[in-house]
Length: 528
Image 1: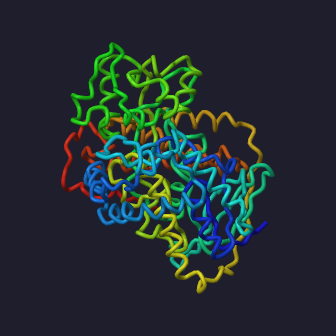
Image 2 (image 1 turned 120 degrees about the horizontal axis):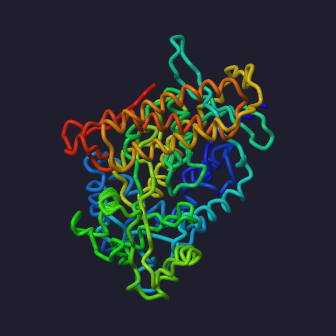
């Protein structure tokens, strides 16, 4: 079946949904999402959105905090317009029904949190469930729009491309999409295709991300010939709950913002050795410090202690974290929280311009899947939801200028061809390779890297990729196989980017090149 639409949005997080609301004023919108519509990285975001809303704060301070955190790689012009465009985007969310936690101290309208790397309280939040609250409001808004159709349990396989006589990609026409429930591949033809597929935390063994975060957008864009940038900068969240029965539950950075102190198991503090902001240092500093202390002591975790705060305050400010920890026998008003780092966010992604346009015509990207220049070598806490909002708005503005003059392509698109592929009778191949890729990345391409570890990772990933490609073309596509193919591609891009950056900067730390060098003050760009 061929489905025709004006906008094909792949992904249903904050970037995709906020764009869909605006795009619906121009034409028809199809949202493809591979699980339930609310399953996204946005839904798991606890902390909030960084924005200057307090008169004692300033754009200059937010810009400066972002630039310092980005370790010399932020694009200053991007940082400036994202920070300055934040207030109208926040007002828009409020108009759409998002209920941020109000302040009890007049005249301030909102309760503002503080997180690592920020020198001011500027994080708007909804308790510790900000992402869930945003998703709720956006889905309720989208549900009222008759020309927006959400296709749940649908996963994009590859982009459909128009090529010139020399075989170069010049235009994106849409995508081939697998209907998971019906086990059939459909052709989606669109004027504009927008990648908002989120991150790729599942490339790593331990991650705060949901199972859907398999880097699909980055992998598809790379295979299509789009430019990919800065994939070496993987942010490991310093504070993931360490418990044998807890599946990668994030302990928000806001806990440290409210006075949480990092300690060793023996109760000794350690962050003063690494940064003047101590436990409120930027994430890359904190993650490396915890990694160092864990390796030094042989312990599996350190502690985050906020027991000096009142129980009622903790239950009110962090209701989700309080209850989740209680499920595992940890009362955070009495017990320090055992934590360890986990893969959390990719600062790189599909390279886009100031308007979210990729290097391929009619293909845009916004949200974590993209590399805009905002984050540089290390994302400042709570800048990610802001980036998604600002760039989805900019994608809309860019498209709106030419929408009426752009016709839906009538170029013939061949239906999906499975070739001689048959049903797989050996799914253990997928399971084993999935596990091997994630362990390989965790062991060799983690917080601390070396040339030897990266070489080992590259050899293993090359072998796995050959096996997967052979398997991919011999058997019918499934969701698991598509995701495995994508995480392997993303893993390879991460390793290649790491090997090109022969220095240490931000989230990329290589013990063979511990210095930060001026000549590497540039983006790492990969292109097929």
